[in-house]
Amino acid sequence: MTDMANASKDILGAQAGYETYSNNFAQRIGVRENDRYTLHSEHLNEMWVRVLKTIGYDVGFTRGVGSYLWDRKGDRYLDLLSGWGVFAIGRNHPVVRDALVSVLDAELPNLVQLDVSVLAGVLAEMLLEYTPWLDKVFFANSGAESIEAAIKFARAATGRAGILHVAHSFHGLTYGSLSMNGDEIFKKGFGPLLPNAHEIPFDDLGALEKALSSRQYAAFFVEPIQGKGVNIPQDDYLIGAQNLCRKYGTLFVADEIQTGMGRTGKFFAIDHYSGVEPDMVVVAKALSGGHVPVGAVLTRKSIFDKTFDRMDRAVVHGSTFSKTDLAMAAGIATLEVIKNERVIENAASKGERILASFRKMVDHYELVCDARGKGLMIGLEFGPPKSFKLKTAWNLLETANSGLFCQLISIPLFKEHKVLTQVAGHGNHTIKLLPPLTITDADCAWIEESFDAVIADAHNAPTAVWSLGKTLAENAIKARMSG
Ligand SMILES: Cc1ncc(COP(=O)(O)O)c(C=O)c1O
Image (cartoon, rainbow, N blue to C red):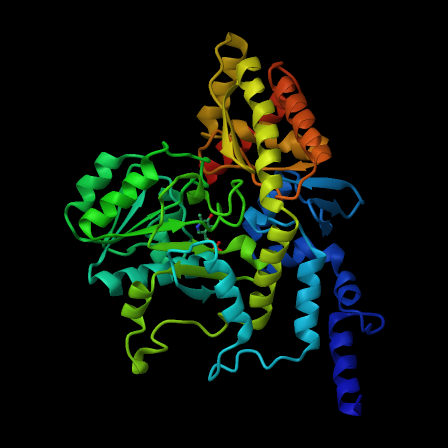
């Protein structure tokens, strides 16, 4: 190493306040571990840190392997959130790691831009095996960015401006995707959004036909199973929607960003419904292997070619980092793992097991009103109780903040049973399970026993669970008054 390089290393080390400059990157950054929440409060999203501290989730996760996380005390947690669906094959899968290391070792040129890479070609070919009616792939850096591309492709292909979506939809938070968001809280304060985006009810073919018959819509976007709420349409909805789209010249787009790559026990959620062949299928999240952000739009040549229609328009849509080698390698390795380790079959069988035990809870517990899902995308919904003592406690929470009850389940799951879950959206009474698709029978038992214990406890008012509820209700009221 040159004197200059040594000098700059010393400078960096001194600036960061390290005793000695270590070559081990993880160790070097690790010495700042105790500063993590302060750093975020000061330089990133302070409100998020406040949320974590308020609900007691500031345990400082330091390690993640497969379906498990370890906090700084060394406690092991079962992760039913999987980074919002990113870690379908678990964290730090060795096959993905090996692929990434091998790409780095190979010193590939990467992002030459005035060339094309073999990795992107191979990944596109592998993805299209799952959609034999489609023939082109456009890569992007995230789910939202892929949705933006799909909006542009649809407008270019049809010459129409309208974009149709359904209530409770979530397609991302960039302007185009936000314009198709079915939840006001995400949109408030950011307007005006895309002027031609309109919402119709989910799972309502009559409403869809009425909208489509205006022939103003370029595309109809829908999640085959909605992430917000884990809402599953009736069996004839998607095929019916496709037929209506074809009838009125609107492109049918399936957002499989959350449901795709095996999540629901088939490679795509649309595979549960025979004959469903959307004009575009959008993927992201799990394709990354949990390591390198990536998204993709799978579409027909006839649609793709309307955007990239002349040589002088060959770069009319794209972005600098799309198709970067590490993302493409992570995608290829992830697809290999999904196939070779029979991950989808595991998602289907473990999902059935969990759903069966949750359905028993619906019969057994008055606060549990529905259990639904496909594969390992599962929702457990709570509803108003009938007995007087529980009704009073429930109403107190609901008055303070609609959907607050679910925190009474998710917080004890986290604190007492080391299970990380999420509430399936604002004002929602559904707890959502989105674990890695590689969970074992022992993990299923962990889920069943911990949910049962927490839910049983919630049926005994007043208990520690309900006193937590009181605190949450007070916090919610305080936050509303100060906001
Ligand atoms: C169905 C769906 N579409 C789109 C997105 C946006 O993806 P990203 O967060 O990568 O932009 C998400 C993210 O949660 C999603 O669940």
